[in-house]
Amino acid sequence: MSVRQTPAFGYHEIAALLPHRYPFQFVDRVLEFEDGKRILALKNVTINEPFFRGHFPEQPLMPGVLICEALAQAGALLAHRSTDGVQAGYVVVLTGLDGARFRRPVLPGDQLHLEVTLVKRRRP
Image 1: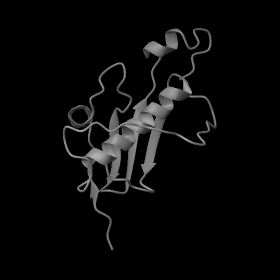
Image 2: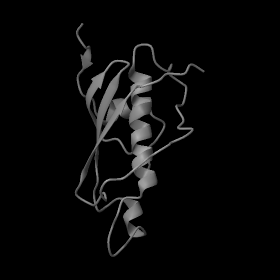
Image 3: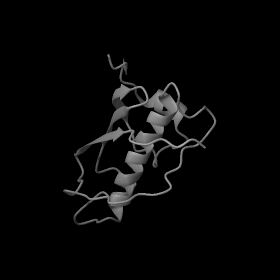
Image 4: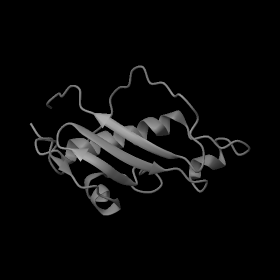
């Protein structure tokens, strides 16, 4: 059985699917997309991010809650873009997160590769 992959997409398609905008849109580009199964998205982390001014000025570090938000946005893109996914006009909301762990700090200049794989699906 072959996996249907869709070509990568960028800002304009992301903006059409998500209600988030700068400075709270944390997905810059989608690198890989498997319909209804998996998404690999990219977040370029730059020193110009507004949260670095206060977290922490001497040692800038991306807050873990924003890393989780970036993953949630990637998941919302998977849900919206999938053939049998969430219909246009609906907002996908993260309602819980268990067992999140951060293996290393995310610093200015890093690229976050946000991989989301659908494990379980609930219908509204």
